[in-house]
Length: 301
Image 1 (tube, helix red, strand yellow):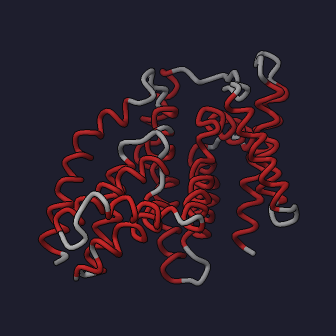
Image 2 (image 1 turned 45 degrees about the vertical axis):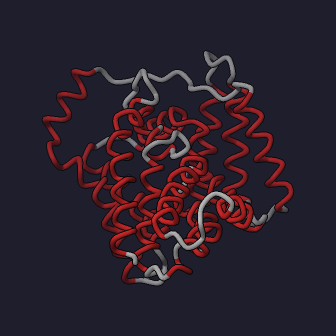
Image 3 (image 1 turned 30 degrees about the vertical axis):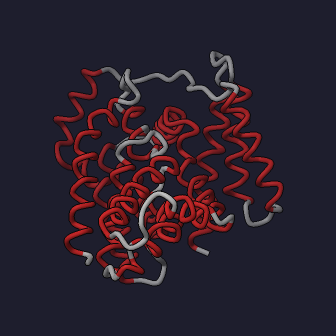
């Protein structure tokens, strides 16, 4: 019930963004942009009440709107750099309280209650919003306006985590892991732990780059490569599994599909090069992937 309430709140945020977009007469694609956020709001607010097939149709329409360039960023009034500098000195480190409260509530509620970390994350976001309003003495409508601005800046990438998680479950149900295992078995010996470890870690990184989600990739790659080529050869499941998952995170650093990590920061910081975060992370990600392979060979067997 608590999670459903948070989904409804997320839908309301999207609904407000839709209203802002429809009312933005300077935005040439305001109808397409507004429709996109309205459809997203419907899936969050009424997801439990409407048929799954209808949700699928809604998602396809949203995809068409995005692919045809109908979802754009609106026009916003931003504060001056002088004002930002002044407020930064005025608030000091107190401005970090809202941010830290999100992590605090997510951890405490996830670890010590039955509600789960996702509910804790939502409650932390609510607390962060309230504390942010108190600290900055901003008006509620300013928070709504800035929330709308941020969501539009991130754009359709904001829903990638949900879509990719669903895609991972779909791939697993379709037997993609078995297809991968069949292909790998023709390329490497089944009893070679070195090649098996390399294939497992590389597979996790590459598939995470495709999926944008290490957890979604883990199910597919573990079924297709991990079990036959690593675990069945005597690897410690705890060590190999942990290293495989974090090897996938190396792929997270290298893909625009991991929108929360690589696209959102670029949008928030208004970078001209939207792939600057990925380019900066790439050398470290590749080095970490090599280290993961070595550690799996040494530690897991």
